[in-house]
Amino acid sequence: MPPTPEQGLLSLDEMAAAPALPSENPCGALWLMLLSAAAQSAADGYLDAFTACRDAQKRRELALLKRAEEERSLALASWESALPPGGGRTAAALMLGLELSAALAQRLPEGDARHLIAFLVPEWLDMLYRFINLTVLRDGPDVEKWLGGCAEIMPGRPLTACQRHPHDGIFSPAAPGGAAEIPLLAMTSAVRAALWHLREAAADETDALARGLYLEMALAAGQHLTALTGLLPHPGAPECLMRLYRMASWLHASCALQEGDSSLGQFSRAQQALDRARISTLCVLFHLPMPGSPPEPLHLGLSKGAVRDTLEHIGMTLLRDQVVPVDALHPGADYFRYQKLLYPHPLAAPSRRVIEEMIRKCGADARFEIAPHPVEALRRRTEDAPGADR
Image 1: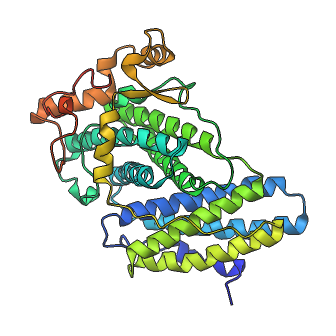
Image 2: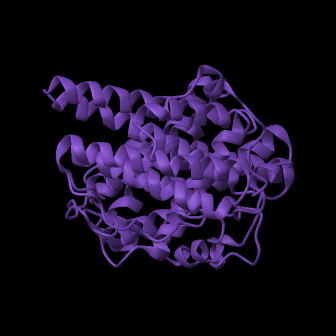
């Protein structure tokens, strides 16, 4: 017999358990953060469905499902406590943004979603690069324990160049049910989690330079979230909730496949049955058709080459819904007007100052590269190539 929604409820002891990181895979931390972000998105999705529903019995069933999803989210958040505190979680959030965007850029079908996500890869890379340099400045060079070889550390599209006018990067919503919808929803959940971590880091920070860098990165991540969310179709609340469960089911199946017999893999396999039960319940409650086959499984940790392939486009920006060279914009373009507003003194931007301070103190920036940087102007480790954002 398949489990009932009530069988998905957890005890407080189960939610509060905080084991060691439940995976030997270096990318296990990324999976943990992604599953946690997906669970939180699903829990939040119940608010719209619950508010829109007027049938008393349906509201009771939704309340039960909502509680089960909140408990799963809290359990995963408890597991996240096994990540290195402070900077370790921020590093994992940035690595997840980088790795997931690079993985999806390789697998999504041709269209706006693929083009946008591929365009954003160099921005996640640069955020990770500048964060790691800040961390080395403050805590020393032992950051490999956070990275596990999952990502290269090198400059991408400079963070100052990632800040665009809010009118730019807004795409038309896709049609419901497209091949990109569920992966795009996963990317949106990951970006929302990264934005939350950056806001928390900025709120807890007492050093002005570090706080400024977190705020810069939060602005860029918030911009990503707006662009990605704008691509999602917007059906009714029950359909939105259904696709959140489809996303969770897809991620649990992918994690179980990659993580094998680790405790994280075992957890994901158990959650798949609960996801199927919740999907069936929603179909019955709202007379929805059973969803079709999920996307092919996702694999994290193999995207270094894909990241490098995107770096030839670091001199590009978004003009409305088009990718264009920065040099092709006229001097009065919205992009430049917003840049002047945000950065009255561009070279004094926290993201620039972190690299300058690192070079002054250590003689070179902090990197981890498997080959020379694909962009010749960014190979020099003794300067933060001004104009690289052009």
